[in-house]
Length: 496
Figure 1 (cartoon, rainbow, N blue to C red):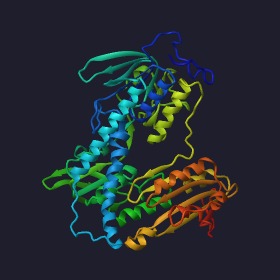
Figure 2: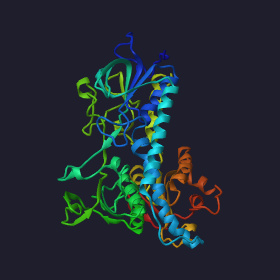
Figure 3: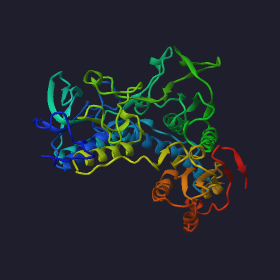
Figure 4: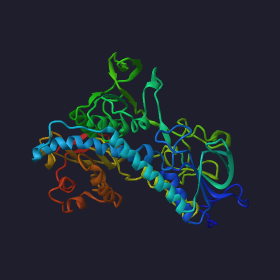
């Protein structure tokens, strides 16, 4: 049995302390966060059950799969397609490095698609084995909460199973949102985009977030014509403005047609494809239209309102700093809480939950200096504060260091695509508050920079670090000249 513990007075207390339960913990949703929480809780001695919908690459309210969005229809298959799309440009660049490449290059979409499918099937099996090896009972079916300590699992054949649990953890993630415009049923979401039978020749992407930018890069890299529509002046709202502008230039440089400050108003099926009508009166024909306009927490079918679990206007489960809902026995982690929607964050939240409830130690997720990446071609990666965030939060001046250069590889290949790096520093303390990079290998480089920021590194420590030469990464330790100094109000003070 799980070790009993008390955290901050009552974190492990429920309304029925003396009751007997089928499980110490029952998890609804076997994605990254749910599986991590289940495994770690079981390792602490808890009796754990978990349920997940039947496996399918394209999710719905009744199909899903162990591994969740990231493994089956998100990060992993997306990155595989990004790799595939990158090779097109690499082959072209190879010509100036002496490789005699035939003029005709053929690409086999179905072969890449099958390789992707094989990999997610393999990972689905690995996740199942991880649960089995941790002695977690896996149930296939749709779970919903029917009481503070009761869950009901509807199996694929319609059979309903009822279980009691001392603690219930919601980890059902999020699902793609479709904007309510006429003809919306003609569009696809990222789920379908990862499993298309045929590679589109003409693609329209609607959205300005990382999913939109990534799929635009993928399809363009594989040879399609791509039109990217978004409502703001620049894509990637919420990222550093300077980096957003760089990404936009790179997208255009790769041949993607950008349509800023433009909304889609209607989709119409025609004999030639899907007619896309914009709010500016423009029209074009596409083979596929991707809606990448955000995701919403997956809570509609969990019966939360009947049980009394509080949710916000988007459907996200409201939780405290320990991931606990207003019902003491019910918790939630991952995208379903709409805090910071990244797979490694869901893993962190799941780990902290298990440590708090079953591990004997109070543990809260730390959301400071979490790195992330946009796998556009080339990629963008950041950690810490953007320049705009630093200006809002720092009491005093902010120093901005930037470096823009032509990567060494491009000097021979002839590709006209700059890499840009940036450090944001508190002028008073010399502490590095944020770092960002857009260019080849940015995510690999930024992971190491994230460790430095987590340790509270100063600009002087960056400057005293010896670089690896020749590499792009060494630029982070050779940016000695201040690009600009700004006040807390964001008003330029000195340009150096």
